[in-house]
Image (cartoon, rainbow, N blue to C red; front, side):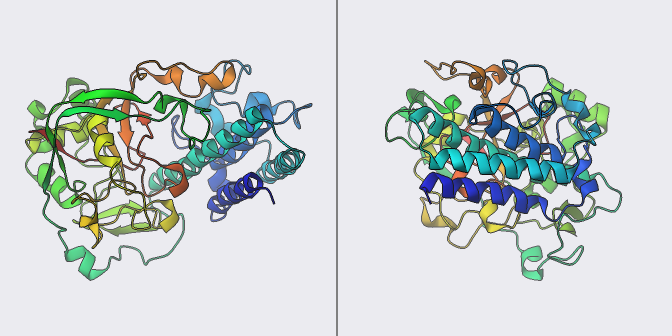
Length: 419
């Protein structure tokens, strides 16, 4: 089998595996406008390949309307906030649709591909991996809104936690000094010969000037965040950006998403809150307020990438491949890379950088040019991947982005400060 065909089969099967623990009812429901039903994710990722790779008449004429996400050049689409109302087609019909698309794509690969079509399939696979992550974050939000906090899967007893882990506080936070000067960040332009895959918003590679700074050796933990809460962090307006204070006041927020007093919700159900684990499901506003309380700040994305580029992605990282689907305390071998740990995986790390184009950025022509560029407004950059990000999908140049109030993603905090 062609290497690309093998990769295609692996990625598509993984998406199906993530949906296996769910009932048809689970796959249908939509918990909020920003989240999508699992059934919609299954259909949309197949629609992407049918639309941008395959030639010929559509398998179902209505699917262009039902499962288009935001591609204006393709045509009108069903409202995002109403995806949970799409009871038809059924889950079984969506699964058959995926099989039909798979058969046609694999046949197309077998017949031979030009460079453009091959690049579109590779893009489609990374697009699907993004939706694998969204399947998990969206179903967690759905189940986390249920009064019983039902598990996505059952691997540990409810409220259970290893005694040693529950008692641990984790290693002390250290500051890793970094020199100032000119650094290079970003990925090579898409399509450049021999370059590994990167999304267009990661390019072009360019120079940036840094002042000397220091970055935290690890992520902020649940125990440290509880200290912020106990010190009145959610009641002190001087710590908060204006929009953030308005948001937490309106929602009467006083803790991260999925926290109760001593427990939190995970994809394995309710569990004891472990102080040494990285805090997750906090907004940019919460991350920024915590950093101010701690006498620090959030790193810029340039500072973050300049450090991350020196840390290889490896088996020790808690990415989706580990199937933990929850942040873990610092590993025993954390000091192996210049004292830095948890750089890739566990939680997406909020940065102080707005999501904007790099110098010289140009969106691709046509519908695929809508993939990233048109969202470069009112969003903040996150880096590093999380415990639900596939390992083959992440890299130091990867730029994730969400509005500042977003909490349903596995988003957390790494501190920085001026030297």
